[in-house]
Image (cartoon, rainbow, N blue to C red):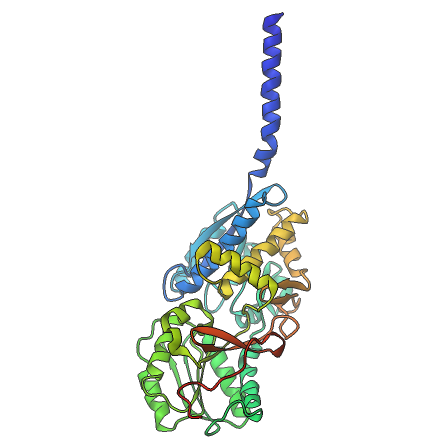
Length: 412
């Protein structure tokens, strides 16, 4: 009897232990998120921010117990130089990973050609950049791309939103320009070149005279002096550079300041990346920049930035904040009961997000383009001026935390 009792008690103890472990084992189910990012190469600053923003969100969610029985996990694939071979290799790596049922990116390629592969594989693909390229692919047949959604809004305002603000500054006597001439330079990639062409068309339509234009090869650029020398032959009131790499923008700023013209200098996007401020520090004071997917001075952004800075020791950039928000959108979809392996259901739930407050604006999606909705009440065009090593938000007015100041090289 004693032997039977001991055996019974041991069996009961083991059964109880197994039952106690079962919830923990269930909690260890993994929902793996694939991250495409340029971890190496000229855009590595954005790639690092992309990875770190996603990682912070995953760490927070897992520390809180995961979501609906799942722990989140990240698999990163390096898109290196953003070229077709590197991006294709990274995409194939994630698509061949059976545990990956969701892929996110700030941007993977300049043209977003990888969207086709993601759609064909039925993979939810959540982007935060290059929305013009996304819309061009998706808008012709939205139903063919049910798994593709862009956290970034339409980039149309990149092309048409800057010149009206410059002209308004003039009319409000905040800015005095010597003439109505403008010069443009860009690098040969779809993102930068489309903005360059759109801004130039808008400027001409407004009666501005274009005095110099140039398209340089995409990649690291160490010498902008030939273009700057050309601008000095007929000094324009405004100089525009739409190359998006922060290292290139820092070099451009430094070389412009070697012999500056009486020109307002606008560098599209690149000065919003922390690396640009680290490279230029106070030298960039006066530079104007913009982004359609930028961090707003709201409570959500402040809380995220505080957590990011505690984790990584630096402020959260645009892509860090964006990927953080995108992971939390995914988390809430799983919390609502959607199975992470049901890819179409996950993608459908992303498209149904409505009026979600994020660090970058209020997010709803346009079913015709699969882009986030743009506008001051949604995802706004943000225009900044760099001053004393920091970015000051000038527009839209409802979010502004400073006023335009006269750049140090401009005569007052």
